[in-house]
Amino acid sequence: MKDSPVTIIKNGKLVNVDEENLCLNDIVVVQTGDIAPADLWLTETAGLEVDEFDLTGEISPVIKKVQDNVILYKGSKITKGSGKGIVVATGEKTEYGQIIKQLWEQNETYRFRFIKKKYFLIVSFLLPLFIIWGLQSQHHVLAILYYLFLSAIFIFLQNDEFFRHLLTSREVKECERNRIQIRDMTALESLHQVDVFCFDKTGVLTTRQMEVKTVYYADGSEISVDTQGQSLVSYLVKTACALCNDVLFFEKLEQANAIDKALISFAIKNGIDVKKMLSQSKRIYDKHFDSENRYMGCGYNLKDFGMCYFVKGDPDVILKMCNSSLMRSSERKMRNTWYLRQDKVNTITRNGNIPIAMAYTSDTTNTFPKKYTFLCLLELENSLQHGVRETISKITEKGIRSIILTGDRAETAGSIGKECGIAKNSDVYLTGKTIDRMALDDVARQSDHCSVFARLLPSQKGIIIRLLQRKNHHVAMIGDGPNDGIALKVADVGISFINNSSPIARRL
Image 1 (cartoon, rainbow, N blue to C red):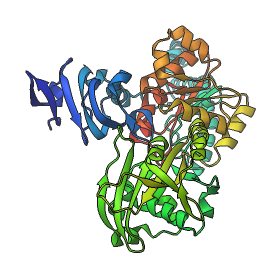
Image 2 (cartoon, helix red, strand yellow):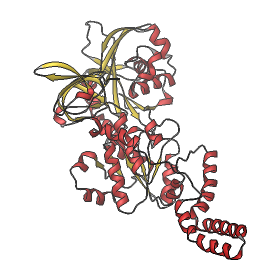
Image 3 (cartoon, helix red, strand yellow):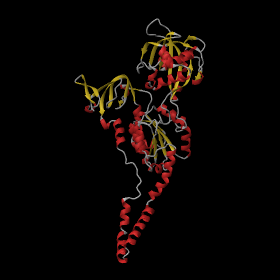
Image 4 (tube, rainbow, N blue to C red):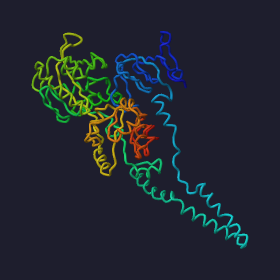
């Protein structure tokens, strides 16, 4: 089957070619819905957003801009916008290609063998002695039996691996009872020597879902998710969460991005029948989110409120669109004191969470509303997996060091590192771009002090593990995505999950 057609610019015209025929320095055009066919150095972008989850593990789409001098990696999914880029790597030489190559370059699965060739060579030296003895004594059968018996005893006593096999078989059965599958029994022996555990972030330390943690109203009140009241503003907030998104049909909820899923889940938890609301509300206005404007909007003819418009997005952008705020008791003009709450936005960001502002209007004097009433600021978090803190604590008590290797943002990774106890007393982290500018010896020295490595490419995860091994550390890597493939392979012990792990992670 041929590769998908790729649009390139040739002699000033758009031409479609097969992916396999791409060459270095070709200029490729990508747009919403495309999958990057090669590693591209971006030369032009228009609201370009990319899903890099398979490569970096980051949940939210990544905004790509030319001034950032960024690469669009093969296998990335274009979720919004368009762009042009020069081909800098194709096939196995791309970052994605390196992951796939690792998948097929498998080490042979360990199999225990009681008898090996080297034992035959050793016992063969005894054979002439027994042949001579048998010929001289005329006890041929007895000589053969003695030879076989002594050979078996020799093989048995010299075969240390046999005894280890007996011991590890018991451990394997215990693991299987706890739903832990061991692909290579030698991993159990290596596991006892591990002194560094490397963790991916998303899906390992944290869940793959986002959720609304706190709602901040204009009057300064901070309300937790499960204690929303029945005031007008709280109802409008829940309605905005249910409707102000790209989910037009409830059945397509699973296809929504992580932020929209979190907002819809918040509405459902607080008593909104989202499916019923979607079916009863007529959508009359749409403004899709783009990276330039940094907000989205929609208009609905609601059963209880009539015409209503909602916007959500970057707090800086939404606040500038508002001339009033809806308090929990009344609506009033926006005061400058609200802008002092920028410190709350900064705090949310420092914590590694995402701030989303929401506003509404029922003004129908024009088709495209210009001014809105501020509703709230939402704090979205990517929460820790159940039991992560306890696990990290037990590992630390045993004198084993823990490290985060992730493709996610540095601020988010640092916050998660502190929250779970991996980087409890340190604000130091290294990013992939920084590592690119450093000598490997310098990276190796920094690895003794840094516990958080962020914005890493899959190959950089493998490099860091190799550097730790060069310093005589035994490393275990825990990951669940294709972006962890290289790290899982080069580690002394690679650990993934039976459920919710990619086929690449489970196979390595």
